[in-house]
Length: 297
Image 1 (tube, rainbow, N blue to C red):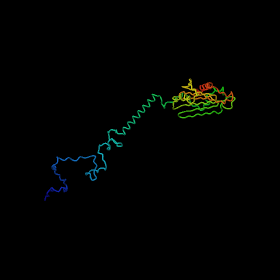
Image 2: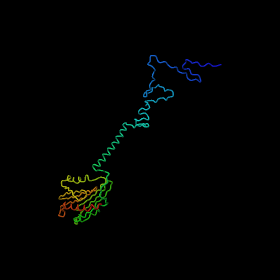
Image 3: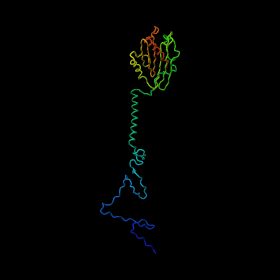
Image 4: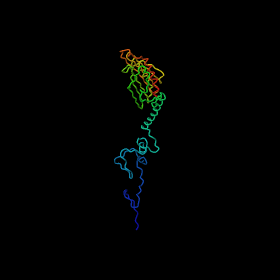
């Protein structure tokens, strides 16, 4: 006895018999009074899911909050958002961070060009090697300086002169201060000091002349005279009165500066206390300087 086939049922929720697929859905007639075939709803990529929306079968539930559609600026793998890796072949960001980097590079190039132009224009290069003209540091300047020009008037030697030598990366200093005595004197009748500076980082030529010319503004009694035959430039500064006499010879040779000063004071109690003239003392200082400079090399 054969089994009659299953008859279709009008129940839309009836489950198919075992071994049979789902019943086909008959085509639906168009809606009466509409505008033709209905258009499926378009997906809005920026719409936020409602609290009661349920995902379709086989889909993951949407993440809460705002969701970037694939390919939108700022989405993972797309340029335009700092901190997000750009996809292969994506252009670099042209946002504020990119412009800041560009201006920083341009500024560095311009600053470098201006610095180089300033060096060429003014000749001021702080990294230039010191022009010491062969002058070197002496541990005992009193032993190096030639003061024999004073011996005819002050034959006694100073047993305890003041001296020092200081060495630094930027400046080497040598100093000597001696008292000068006559044969009949118990105490010093005059004083001479010598100072030598070796400038290792800064060229002193720019301010050397003004340093000594400005003595005329210290006191009207000072007289400043340029002299030749001593290094690149030299100035003789004198000041003389009835009670004291000062004579200073300042020399610059390259980045070496040299100063020798002679000074004397008078008590005015006898003819022996009479001071040498500024001209006589100037000759001593000039002669002693001419003999000392070569010994500093």
